[in-house]
Length: 232
Image (tube, rainbow, N blue to C red; front, side):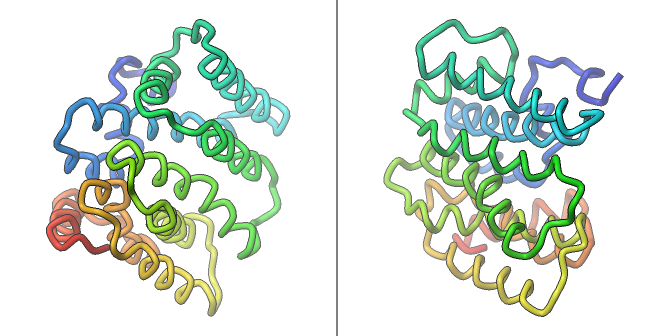
């Protein structure tokens, strides 16, 4: 039994809190409960995509899992009944309420396909992966919170968070990585206050890049200061 199976599958907020603590903590700064639930649905979707390469016994099985989620999008965007999976149903509600673009959701799936390869990512591939996964998630979350948000700034914030985690977990290194992370953080500056919780987790990227996982208290404090200043 997996960690996910050991808990109530319908409680997406608790699930995201366990598997994605950085973004879950950032979502605590979303005042509107309905908007927060929609952002959590998006993060739960991203978690399901991330699980596909990890739990599959081979690349083909991983691709089958990702195809399952492509079929969910078919159901949602073709106005057909959505399969009774808690994340699929919550994602469908979020898409319906906010008109989220299918292209970005598809891009999140496409980016996870890269993880089915055993070959280490080169720097350019890693940046594409970061934009495709956390970058697109940040854009969609920002649109939920503020339909007028600057999408380039939101994507930069998501990219920074993903790069920080990738440096620590996948050993991405080299003289260019630090400046790229700094540039992503700089490019995220100025995102609107309503949309800011979509990228607040990027304030933890430098800590993550050093291979250190901050305590919950430190993470909460860093996120609080980032939100108060509107700066990652």
